[in-house]
Image 1 (cartoon, rainbow, N blue to C red):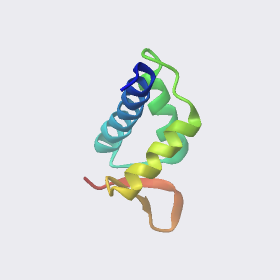
Image 2 (tube, helix red, strand yellow):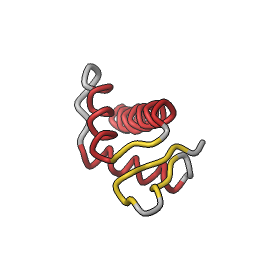
Image 3 (spheres, one colour):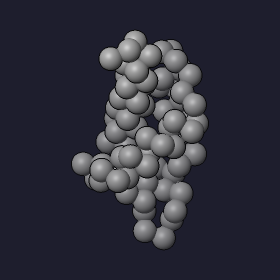
Image 4 (cartoon, rainbow, N blue to C red):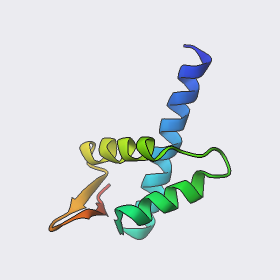
Length: 80
């Protein structure tokens, strides 16, 4: 595995861990607030791209760690 591939996997992992940690604490959170908190938590390590955070939110939605709150598309609930 190349060094760059390892770095990308590490970034994906760190973003997902931050999202799950935040959602586990908050239980329910609006999209914008979740994005802000992820960026805030990771800013000392690296500056995550908004597109990468969104992609990882989608992965966690598909893996059923979080869900969209019924009737509110911009709000997530923690499941796992």
